Length: 361
Ligand SMILES: Cc1cc2nc3c(=O)[nH]c(=O)nc-3n(C[C@H](O)[C@H](O)[C@H](O)COP(=O)(O)O)c2cc1C
Image 1 (cartoon, rainbow, N blue to C red):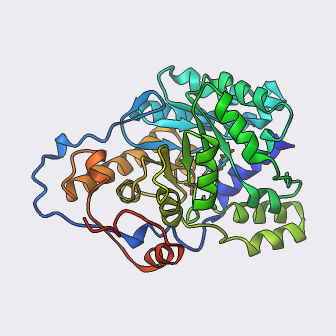
Image 2 (cartoon, rainbow, N blue to C red; image 1 turned 180 degrees about the vertical axis):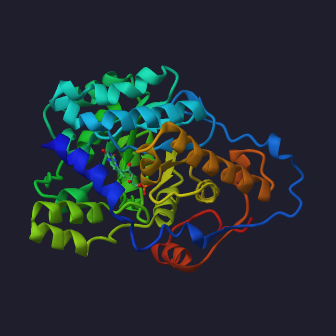
Image 3 (cartoon, rainbow, N blue to C red; image 1 turned 90 degrees about the vertical axis):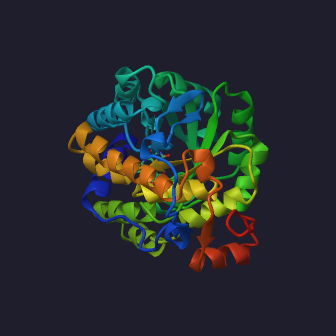
């Protein structure tokens, strides 16, 4: 059943517009144009270190798939593209393969592409509540010889999907146990509703290595589940899902929420990242890198070259952004001047967040 659900999710993401109607609010961040960059494009270095490996650009392909025989090809294409460009790749939830080892190859394929590729394993908060949590985490990592493990928090999706896991008590303790016992970095991510300052504070206390905000503005999981329930004839669930289509903390707001704590861990910006300027604005706010999901799923249905083309454009846009603000490196980009306006400014003020951009530099 989980395996079939995985396939219907990617088909819905391919065939329907499942985007938030509200945006990421990264457009409320303005980088200041520099008419005198005083650098040559070729000097710009956007490589960075992540979980013990160097990646050529601060970009990872966010968790999406595996877990159904039909998804193996998609993971293979994503891995080939990530490997060609030297960026990182997260696999989708490995729950289906943990329960049915016959599906392991749909995930293993990514490590078969290259032993040097930065690969991130994935399980859900629901698996952490099982007595076998630690075992699941270790098996997910060893299945693909992963460099890190991501655990996704997805209460909205669980609440609106037919047969969702709606027990949420005990997740933070389980995360803390895992962070303290795992011998790989632990990332905690949302899947499109964002992470608040309050949740980030708990995660920092728990000792996680990275937070991926996965904010609102890109793929709406309420939208995906709306179509899923409709296809199954579950009218009640589809109506509830539709009401929460636009629920969540937009990506720019979530970044400010998390970064206001000045956490000493890796912060990943994701949720609606479409282009290199979005990546640049995220890093200027203080994020370390960005994650991209559905934007890359659509080319992944055709070929690895199509994914490479899409990512090459994003990387070119990121380098262009750095040139236009006169920065040679991501470290410089993190302290480039910026202006925050509109709803994002309003949010920051109402929430009393201390963020870059509002201090005078
Ligand atoms: C088809 C699809 C499947 C996904 N499956 C998972 C998953 O198994 N585990 C997970 O942590 N996130 C999953 N996600 C969520 C993404 O990793 C990401 O957080 C979210 O889609 C927001 O990014 P986007 O707006 O770039 O799509 C999935 C996303 C898509 C589009």
